Length: 241
Image 1 (tube, rainbow, N blue to C red):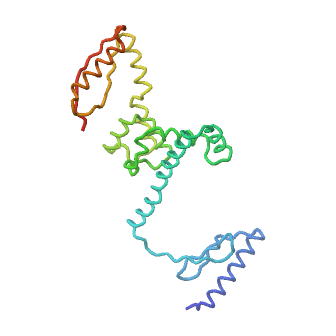
Image 2 (cartoon, rainbow, N blue to C red):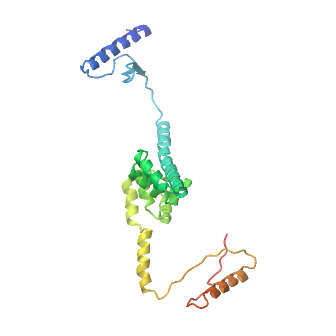
């Protein structure tokens, strides 16, 4: 039987009234879906009107690209927010006041705020080149921030951390690789055994007369510490490209 548009509209309206009446009186039907040929029909909870949805086949690749693009914006927004928070923190004398207001007004929860600030401390995460390589979850990006910049850069370059990395996988790197605080602790142990410390200075000078200039710098440093037990030597001169 072919149903005309007028009959179909009348049927839809009648079904909608019946469904709404059952809902208001507490009588629950098996489903709010309506059996009208060729279309998928549901009741809009806000307006009470029947909404007709016609489904078609969607290209899988196009759908994945669209979803990935939309989801990727989440990582981008995380980095943008982290960068903004750090900028405001660095520029504001009343950062503590701003920080408290962010939490008090339920803009960003305290734990998430701390994670974003930690993320903003790692330059590798803030590098736009690495954006496509970032894990998608905030917690995973936060775990990445615990990894030293040099190590994290290598993990990105070797694809050991990428957009598909889980929180657990990133955490396995952040907990096994040495962190700067651990390296400092090891250095302190080494210092106890050392008789003296060597300080390496990198001073950039013009190419013209660079040997003479370098020697002059060494002489000036020696003069500064003339009456102290310091040994000042020029070890090497390297070109800077």
